[in-house]
Structure formats: C-alpha cells, structure tokens
Image (cartoon, rainbow, N blue to C red; front, side, top):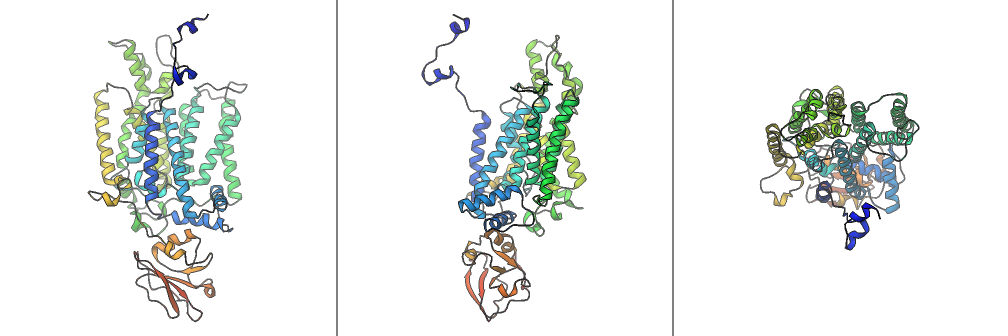
Length: 539
C-alpha cells in the first residue's frame, strides 16, 4: 500500500466524491454577482435616452427587412434575433444589456488575475473602474462608470470593452507564457490557431466600436512589449499572425461595408444634455478642462504606476534582501514586487531572475497608460478615455490588494483612495443606484427622456412623420418610424408631431397627445397641407 493512501484523510458526505475539496466562491464572484444584479436593475429602471434610439433603429430596420449604409455583423445578428423572437429594437437592447455586463465583468476579472493572483484585486479594480472617475459625470459608452453605464449598457461599445478586456488577458497570458499548456508546437510554443483566434477577437472589437478597437490595439502592444521574452523567428511569426488576422477582418468588413462609423461621442446637439463642450467627441479649446473634471480622481492610480516603474531598478535587490525575519521578509518583498517577479524563476541565491526586465517601464500597465494617453492626446478621441484610466485604476487595485502589514506610504495611498472613492460616488455616481424617489440630498440622476409609446401605437410601419421635436427626432426611429423634413415624400406625409409651441395646421386632426411633454400627434387629411417648416423646437 502506498504512503499516499495511508495518509489520505477520511472524507464523509458529499465531499467524499471530490476527495474532500469543496469549491468556494471567490470574493470577485460574490461581489461581481451583486454588481451584475444591481446594475441590471438600474439599467432597466432608466428609460432609453441619447444614442439608444440609433441602435434600436438599426435593429428595427433589419427586423423589417431593410438595410442601412453600414451595418456591423453584431447588428446583423441582433436583427436576425429580433426577427426570430419577435422582439422590438427597444426590447432587444434591454435583453442585451445584462449580457454585455456579464462579458465586462468576466473580462475584467480575467485581466486582473493575469496581472496578480491576489484574490481581492479584481474586487478593488471593479470598484475603482466604476466609481473612481471625477466629480462630474462622464457620459458616453466605453467605460464602467456607474452613471453612464445605466444608459450605455446595451450599446455595442459596452460589449467591445468587455471583449477588449478578454483580449488583453489572453494576450498577457500568451506573452508571459507561464502556465502549462497541453499541446505545444515543435518549437515549444503555443499553437498558431490560438494566435489567429486572438487576432479575430481584436478584429471583432474594432467592428463593434472602432474607437475601442484602437485603444485595444494600444493595449495589445503594451502587453506584448512588456512581457514577451525570447524574441525569435517563431515568436515574431505568431504575433504577426495575430496582426494579420485582425487586419483581414477589418479589410473584409470595409469591403463589405460592415464597418460602422466611429462613434467618438454623442451626436451633434447633445451638448445641453451631456455637458460636453466639444463637438462629435473631439476635444476643443475648452474641452480639456471639462475632461479633467470627469476623470481627475482616477489619477490616484498614477503613484501605483510610478511604483511599478521604479521597481525596475531595485527588483532583484529587494527580493534578495534579508531581514530580521529571514525568508519571511524576502517573501513579503517578492509579494510586493508583483506576481511576475515571483513566478519568473529563482536562482541559487534567492534572486528573482528577470524581474528587472519584467517590471519597470516595460511593465504592461505603464506602457498601456503611456500609449493610451498618446491616442487620446494625438487623436483627440474622447472615446478612449475609459481605456486610458484602466491602467492606473488596475495598478491601484493591485497595490492595495497586498497583504498586511502595510508600510506608511501604502496606508497613505489607501486612505487617499478611500476618500476619492467616497467623493466620486457621492458627487457623480450615486444617482445610478439611488432612485430619485428615495434620494435624500439630490444626487446627479441619469437623464430621463420621455417615451413615445403613445405615438408609436398609432403610426404604421414605414409611415413618414414630420417633426423637429428634440427628443422625438432621436427616439422615434427606434420604433421603426421614418422621419422626414417635409420635402421628401411630401405626398405620403400623413403624420405630424407638434411641440406645445407649434400651431395645428389646417386640415389636421389631433389623434393623441403626451401629458408629460405636451406634444401632439396629428394626422393630416386629404385636404390638409404639410407645413413648409416647423415653428421651432423645444428641449
């Protein structure tokens, strides 16, 4: 009888089938599930607004058998699902929102686990990415901030961000190449199919949202340049295959007119709603001031990035330094240096080989922050702001997830971060989870645009409607309703949607009206005339 059999502990009950080991939920799984439930309810609570009408309109057109000038494969899949299930564009957005959030949460957890094995680091990263922004809300997609997420969770940009997290995690795992794989190539490297699939994933991110795809490419360069070692022909070939696969996807999509225009920001005319001071999502002369108000709290993670860069000089000496506790002191020092330094390999003297090369300026988070800043400043693309802040927020989470006791500088950083989280939540993000009915102090609430269900039930499919009401122009297309300016399809115009300041023209009959906005839906008779231009618009 073997020694292992003699030493095996007797197990009873249901655990006997698994050898006495019970799988426990990690802290991130518990808090991630709570976050998913909370934000799903918050997303369903807030009525559609802003760009939701554009996305719902694309699905409604495909559901009716019409095509647009540029439709991504994801929107085509949504249109096919809408035709199979009978869901409208608005209903499909509500269904896709929780699915997008699930991809976001799993991708973030996988990314942080690649950076560090500390169990509480993903929980802190989720908290920082959702709250640690600024003292004014930053509207728009491409981020995990609580308040914008209540409106943008159903957008393709939310799914693109989650897939970008997954792509970065897979890229980092392949660049470090530390975990065992079952099948390797003749050169001892991973198979080519994995790199090709990774390239297809980056191409899918660019198809969903070109701005997020640009930021994801910068992150891929950061992880590859920061962690890849032993550059030789086979290694170069695998990364070149990944780039070729992503490029092929983009070329084919451009040729098939499946690449949507980059949604760099809210459409023109939404400045009064979002508070942005630059048109079309590009920074203007006064845009950087407004941008700083919406993200300055995330700069608390810059000291964590600086610490990761500074460890390039003292990496081996820190891990090999002795102390009063001997090996315990060395283990704590190596634990503070990060997972890469501990797992890279030890020499005879206990020095971590290659740690000076892995961390430092070639640390992927440091490189990613620099590259994303170049994309933001060089291109003036506000849509990559969420990706710019991922590096300092994740670095701060990794730093504060270290085991205690903490040195003074880490305790000071922790108190400053706690104050920043409270300030950011109370000033800019609390309205996402605190309803207006129970709001004690008047938090900033998500925009509550009016619904046009009352008008859509009277208008038939593909019937043109003449209106210049601010909200109606942006939401009515989501019901599959065609808008017109009065010049096109003039003989077919039979519906008018008038604001409370516009007069009812002769020959028009009132069909319904909204008690909230005072807008009137009127039907033109055969003797009625279409007004040449509306009297004005209201907001």
